[in-house]
Length: 106
Image 1 (spheres, helix red, strand yellow):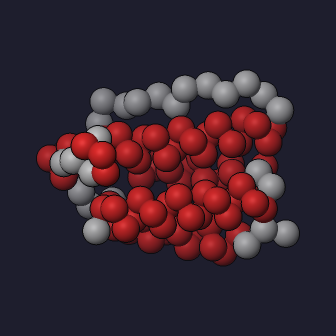
Image 2: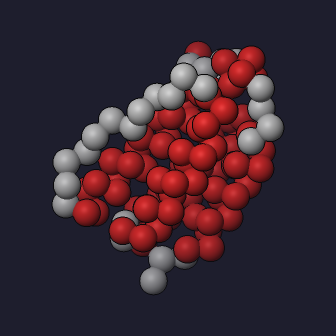
């Protein structure tokens, strides 16, 4: 059984950190010059791709919604799927990636 609490805790902490952000805060540059919104969307896409692999289906692009305020919700939905379908090592890697993003957003 994966360390489900590690992934859940990482998601909860990141959502708590960013859920109150305004559009200008999402637009600010993060790592390597990409916006924070781009970094978060890339994380959500990576997680969705791992879910697709675990389910044996082709990966599909995660919609990039017009409003970046939806990114925390997208993260939570994809993380729930990841917990349900992905093997423990993938869940652990996801938690590590989430914590890295949290640190970059600090």
